[in-house]
Length: 468
Ligand code: SAH
Ligand code: SF4
Ligand code: F3S
Image (cartoon, rainbow, N blue to C red):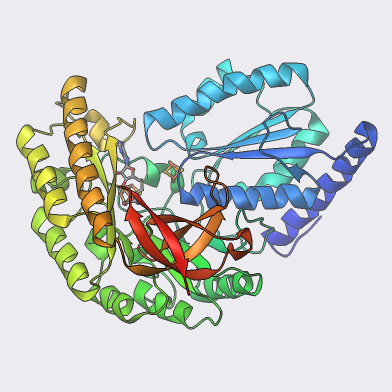
């Protein structure tokens, strides 16, 4: 067979798998089911939608139940406990497969890009049928076809890629909101981080492809998009016709019918004044900025290879708060980076105090083999890290609580996102600044923007009432 491009080739394999699945359906007298489980970040979540899109097209029915005909784990390796979770669940899956030997188990995603992981899987988890990585998820149908025809395990992991394959089927978890990749990979090599090794070099998508995708989403009922990249602020720099992230945002803003725009993640070193200006005057870009700090110590930031210092970071926060007064600022912080002293840690607490984060994700440093930090001396003892972590968390929590309190009593525009699972008759939605509010309303409002009075701040969320 010869194909003019990769998309066409994969569509051919989707068709071939479809025929095989049809035969099985007749044999079993029922539809086949597939369960895709996502570990990790928004990029992985988005990849899973693409994987499920291919499986749906082949004829599998989507299910959340791992007692399925095909189970695919899309893995994460950013911290050790992400890996441990996968190994734990594989034990459980092997029991299910013992009862249903025809079941197909696939593993993909960031963990598979680490040779020592694949070696371990091949040695101790021999029941796995398909293994592939982050660079070739678009090959799913081809790999599945190979597995179904041969009956043998199929493994295909690429070291990297320059290719971006567009236009394969995808499904969406939500009807009214969607993630949109604007770039893949990362070139920053923060010294603790495994992502650049498992996701490869930074590649920006063409603005035309991004805009076409969003227009298509809006035509299908999407009102909020989340632009995804490890460092969205460096978007477009390597394109044939370079454009800035701020310029891309302006073009997206013009898309009729689109109501809300979010993005993540912003690296402080590349956050431009141009972006702040565009955000300040935009009607659609949400008043939210996720701005990972990692550490407040300029000394550690240098060793982390972050390319900003404490003062530059705080100046940035000040600028954001001045130009966009009601902005919600959130962050990521690592505790226990090698060599972190009590003084370094206190610098972190100081930034948290000054930046007044609306919320913060706090992580205990996890040693990732292959990264420069893994070889650094003075790994901080566990009990010291635990103590710092608790102190940080309690500061972060008390500040978020105060911040939420500040909006109590105000009326805010809210996107209704889901039925509240705990309180009958209630729905839950998000403000522009990404805070959550629960209020009584009809489920038919899911996907609509409504005005809600924030009656009571409850720490991290609000209870509210709809107003006209
Ligand atoms: N590209 C984003 C981060 C993606 S990873 C950025 O640069 O901001 C998400 C978060 O995981 C990071 O912000 C960091 O806080 C945390 N993280 C990454 N590697 C880690 C490690 N080895 N140990 C602990 N936390 C880590
Ligand atoms: Fe990791 Fe740094 Fe890249 Fe973020 S910017 S993904 S922390 S290397
Ligand atoms: Fe994890 Fe890969 Fe995302 S390592 S955080 S799933 S890019």
